[in-house]
Amino acid sequence: MMTERDAEMLLPFYLNGTLSAEETDDVEQALTEHPELREELAFLRALREHMESQRDSTNSPGELGLRRLQQQLNSTEPKPVKQGWRMAAIAASFMLVLQTALTWQNDESVHFTPAGGGSEAGITGTLVSVTFVPSATEQQIRAVLLDSNSLIINGPSALGIYQLVVDDTDKQALARLEAQSIIESLQVQ
Image (cartoon, rainbow, N blue to C red):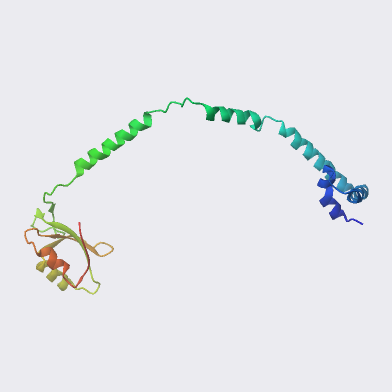
């Protein structure tokens, strides 16, 4: 004998007519015994009818949509492309070139002011970013700066980076600065 749960699982197959004769008899007997199964079968019938009516509905692109797509693909005449974006891209490129040209730095000397605001206004030289080893003392840093003919123009930053100007007239100053053991990192700007 078939349980109510088994009969409920077979209802879609019963509705489609795909059950064996024995299973069909068992499901029909369960339908007479359980009114909730009859309600479930009525719901499945209504759902099936609704789905079948939706197949012919215009909600789906179906054949009409397929024909329209094929016509668009077979169209030999390309649609005109608007040129507005090209003009905007050319204008933006021109502005970028103009800005680069205006801000380009030649080999002219750059004038710096020392961080202490001393009287050496208009110092020229190579800009260098430097970090010192954490154990470096103020006296050691001062000795390195004097030896390499350098001035602090900014720093230390929150990361311990100093910006220095190395005098360009002393050709070996940058090499002496790089050779110092208390220099942790050095980057020429």
